[in-house]
Image 1 (cartoon, rainbow, N blue to C red):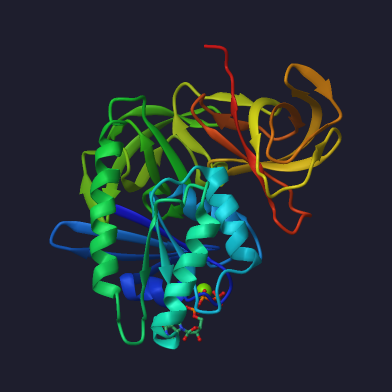
Image 2 (cartoon, rainbow, N blue to C red):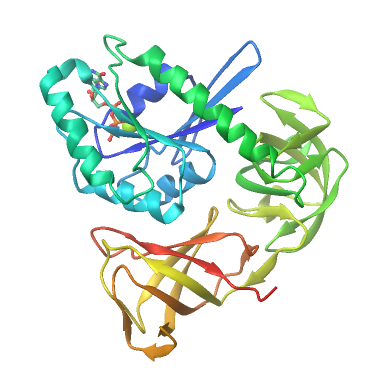
Length: 348
Ligand SMILES: Nc1nc2c(ncn2[C@@H]2O[C@H](COP(=O)(O)OP(=O)(O)OP(=O)(O)O)[C@@H](O)[C@H]2O)c(=O)[nH]1
Ligand SMILES: [Mg+2]
């Protein structure tokens, strides 16, 4: 199962590309497309609601393992820049730069664009991503793109297989009530392996649940490993008690306040004590206030862009997380909304 996010600026050809890679399925502020043939399953998430909101972008990145960053012949713009900062903040390692609508550009212009993007990507997670020109009208590059996705998928599958032995965690992105079955959730197994009849907890609300049954791509299965997109029928909980972003897991830490070891983006503004940020942990998000900043062991009033600092943040919404979770820091009032990322030191 290969899961791909399609991101980029407005009118960058994202939806056209998604629709050529799979069949349209579920729609919320992201749109899912899927494709299944002889054992291979491709799931494509179009971050439809971006750039209006950054939530769909973060959702798409969390539900997938490979990113396609779409850049049209008009070249990178402010939102392309924001997407790159987002990819850095989210630590997305696998992806491709897709030069869309290639039928509208001359070869010379495409070569120039490729060089420009290489320059912009220097020092970011995109630095070593391949670039490929595609057109959804002439189909130029489409087969090559699929081959590149498949070979990246193999690397990802190997990495995910290393996570199968960890304690199970499923991040939920959709919840509904099915008559006669009850609460059904859709999500992704982020680590570990889940089995039908597993007794586990719904976090951060800390309610015991039982996995009644597991479906993968509409087929009932007994278990699902890291990386699987699953549908789960749950016992002991009602759909109204589950929200997007909830995590099915034992061993979560749940708090409203956080102390994070942070790395701020070079492309953000200074962060001051008293500022209101929006943090994301997986698909959960919450507004928080910056209470204290420490840089190089000193308590300071603000942290510079590009710096490392320890931020003490206070909020009012419970968030479930584990030590390896990366918190994404954003500031919704700024033009470039991604501030940086941080990890919680749980002292273990
Ligand atoms: N010539 C040509 N036009 C394309 C191609 N791909 C997309 N387009 C056109 O470009 C426009 C934008 O394409 P979309 O796929 O809707 O782009 P998007 O990024 O999803 O756009 P928004 O979601 O509206 O921001 C549409 O008019 C498409 O028909 C292509 O490969 N070649
Ligand atoms: Mg679109």
